[in-house]
Length: 530
Image (tube, rainbow, N blue to C red; front, side):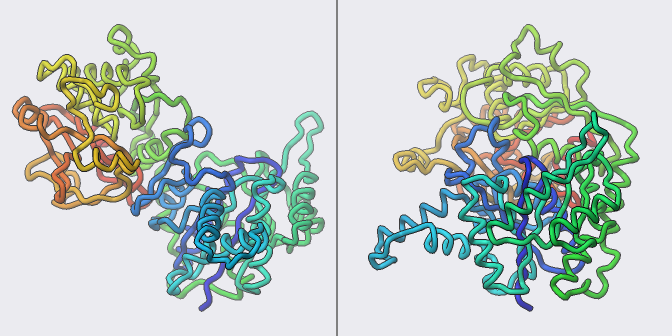
């Protein structure tokens, strides 16, 4: 079977939820028995989101093969359980960089380099990259931005060309917004009509329309949109506001989106997969039936939902699986100090010390760790959060009052967090980041060994600085155990204090590996302990 391509575009306004819709389509096609992957094409000129401010673009998600990507890839993985890679995240910056590199090598044999055909050809090659070897039946491609944005034009032209080249093996799903005018008491379809006309002016006729709405749309509105936008009645789907994003696949399924997609490709469910949404339905049912609640504090410096998106979702998912409604309270570490930390953390059942970079809010995180450690409050430190656990322990248990990370103070006499020698050599070339999946061997008898139930694990990283092994014996003798190490270079991956109820720090990011149907064991155990 030839690989089928689904392009997801957005119109009228941004933030309609193309990532959730793409993820939902992926989940539905998987449950139909097909092999699926999802990729994101972002129109910004940055090479990747690694240098973007979280306030502008939310969290930076990391794939197992070490690519810094848009947070939508986190949605893709959580909804589908697939593992994305370098081919699943492409930006305008990557496209232009590749074309310029080819031009400098002489690959174009002196041709004048233009948006059409050189940029568009590069985009088409990237879109089709995941099809190599017939690995997938469906490739879903989400185009970032909104129709009409000048940055998206080359991507849309590439889609136009591909749809002609691929014939019946490609379709376009366009997501738009239907506003409700409260004063008039009316739903307005004109923005959708204009968005589709703009798409048509670019040579693309959408095959399916998904209408984001805060109000339920009556059938006459759906039929009107179908008539004005040249799509069949069964190809107009409404995406209402729902209590949870995890209800979206079920809502799409109830309206027959999966059947419509397959019908347009002349396909049907793979035999035996008609009822395979049952696990998802059970998950949503559990989410609705939550009664007991736990309060968890996120101690970080970005007061923005998307800045710690994967952590929030991992906690929420773990809560559902353990029968607990997780209520998250953000605690700004910039405002924390020894005088107000008790008040700031009061009433919390557990605390997550969040990841990050730079010096801002560091001392507040350390004060939070001091409070949770001395009051035996379950604490989960992630990446920089783990490093703050180490520094706090060095200062207040080992007596090294000037202990710091050399990231914050290169001249500190007690650099309990430092660049390792191999990284110092790489730093001359700017290659100090440890990105992607690395092995971790768990210590026998450790808390984390019991949680994982196995000796060797693999987790994803995004950091430069490491635990300084020169101090390891002193830590372990004082009660902070090294519970996990990288077997190749002996770097400390996990620390824990066994004498406390739940006090674990990971140098890696477990939130990147937690999915709806396979929640991460560390998040599960953390929430269960509260």
